[in-house]
Length: 128
Image (cartoon, rainbow, N blue to C red; front, side):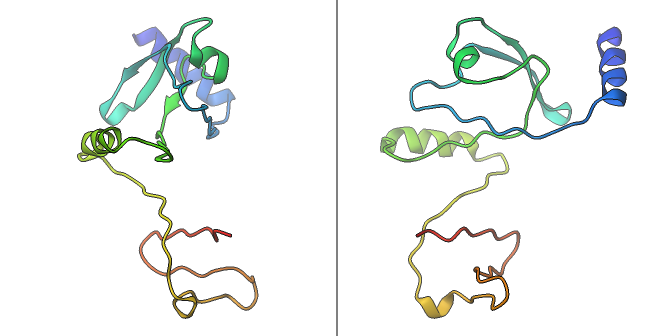
């Protein structure tokens, strides 16, 4: 373990960390990966099986840190959505919502031509 830590420290000196977003198709999932770690150290890909859905559809590599997972609720069964949300309860979660609001409640920025959103860590993409 000490050698692995030293190797990772050396790699960190000569490399740059980047965030990569990978998406699977429905039913492809991420089966075929093993993860290790957890807690404050984070969750890391420890192994990717050859010819697995994860190896074919994703470019996951051993040592990649899993920062988050986004689950799309399009065409999801109620029971599955409930199970996913229940499992996520003790963790930090970010929701992407679609909401109908009166036009007068959506302030527009005159310079950017986009939407302004107010509130803690609010993010909004114009849906049209």
